[in-house]
Length: 287
Image 1 (cartoon, rainbow, N blue to C red):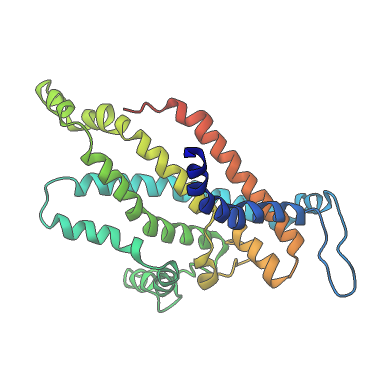
Image 2: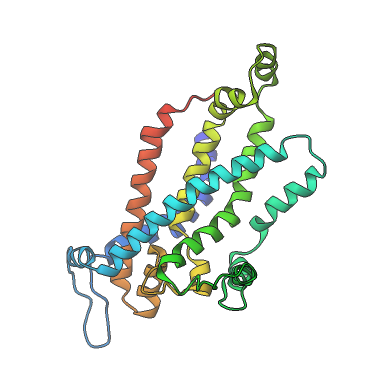
């Protein structure tokens, strides 16, 4: 009877997971092996033809490289900035509550709203950044129209948006660290810098690991500001994998190829998760 009650409690969650997670994954995997059904031609089994086309698709190669560069640029920077902010607001400073609110405010803003705010910053001639550059006597930059600056511009936006969110986790972890260790270090005459590297940073590794996983997932799920700021341009310089999937499915109406791209995206996230949990996690010492 207890086992029956257990299954009854699990059943609602299992149904939701089956309908909204397991079924879409299986259906997407199946669709990736077929062609699209149209009025003039039926659905045809293609085998691995979509995957073969994917390997020779220059736009896919570009978006994949862009996504890895985007993750490489945003994940470490967001984590480092979040840790610095957490260390600052954990100290006894005047207006500490206001400073915390200031750091956390970008997190509570919708991503579309954030994109529109930064569109004002990046707009040529009249944008805030170019106004500042003009006051310094330099020529303004077309931040989003230049392929060399478009992707870094999106990286800066993302770091600004996510660092405050990650700061909350670091702040909670810092408040839970044992005070006895710092008291003992103070008695030994240990400097603040040594305390950070030998006590604080190692004890924060589990939190850093958790934040890194979330940051990597967000890097490959980044799509909203692209709709507002760049549409993947110029010349696919800001076209990331998830936006390319959307564009393929709903602009080009090539659903089978979009399914193939989705499978690849899921596989990338799975591989990254295996590396993180299989290799990195073993090097982390939990309390």
